[in-house]
Image (cartoon, rainbow, N blue to C red; front, side):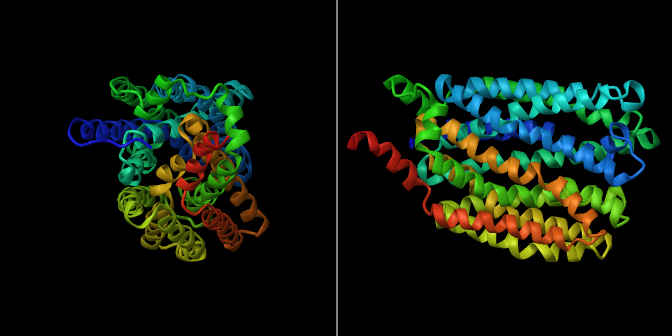
Amino acid sequence: MATASAGPDRVAVRKAAFASAVGNTIELYDFLIYGTAAAVVFNKLFFPSGDPWVGALLAFATFGAGFLARPLGAAVIGHFGDLVGRKRMLVITLSVTGACTALIGLLPTYQQVGVWAPLLLVTLRLVQGFFLGGEQGGAVLMAVEHAPPHRHGWYGGWTFLGSPTGMFLATGAFAGATALSGDAFLSWGWRLPFLVSLVLVGVGLYVRLRLAESPEFAKIRQRGERARLPVAEAFARSWRQILLSAGVNLGFNTFIFILTTFLLTYGTEELGATRDVMLVGSLCGSAAQIAGILLFSHLSDRLGRTRVMLGGGIFLAVYAFPMFWLLDTGDPALIVLAMTLGYAGSAAVFGPMAAFCAELFPTKVRYTGVSLGYQGGSVLGGGLSPVVATALLGLAGGASWPIGAYLVAGALVTVVCLVITGDPTRWSEAEESEPARA
């Protein structure tokens, strides 16, 4: 991977990392406000049902639909990102995702237009998921490919600051909308966080359009070394890395989307906690995850990517049951504590993951490979976990232990894939040396 020298290049590295963080924050804000709305709004306005858990299950299913579109977006946008450049694709993904979010805020409800309301909602969610599928891989590469190798973890971690920051903004936006609209929240207040996206997208585009193209991509373009069919070459030569990175992300995504989405409904419907308590837990947790990402990203440059992430994977498995023990007390302080600890500990996997995934693939198929692997894990983990958890809760008569067992199973997938992977750079270095041996 490219090495950034001292002087002006250091400014370029920081600018690229900052731009990736800002863009990813806005993209994740757009995606995550849907998760919050699915838990507290859409089950009532778009999927009305006599049973609140049936409405929640349907709302979470549309949340998962956005994940199902991600791998296709990863393949298509990653393919063109390896052909025409990272920057161009990132401008497109940010623009379309933001437009979809704003349109969701303008949708009529089921009471107004009947079945057209959920159909339009699902359509916009699918388009949003498609373009987000190509966003995160590209944002990761813009940060990591500008950075010197010994700082990949630190600067790559900046990209994933977008997730807790986006969650922080999404939760704060809903808290603000609730306070502003009061009893009218379900009438018009819920729309405000979606419409605010237009302002955030404008900021993100301003930052991204001023950013230079990735130096590593520029280098292979100048040398004429780009892959002719990146998606085909990624599947043919890098399929092992795609599967391993998907497995690593699966356990993390399963855990984090239980925290960010399912618990909002579980807390209010099952535990009797107020919506404000659950939102405070999300806000405190997001702040803790921001600090955790910075800490563990830095440690991964010193101790090694896999070693730090293995510690995080083990935490996900060990903490699954204690988290629900704390939640099930129903005590507001312990609920907030349980959520905050979960967010903080999961950062040990999440923070170094940007550099981990980027280092697995050679430059010419890196956008495609990173996007497919990361989004594959997102679908199987985050896309399914709120639906699976809701179904398990119903089957168990409200008992939380099956959800804890489900989280442990996901965490074990992460741990096993990390052990098999070892040092991620050995995979890309071996693949890049193959033409020389041919």
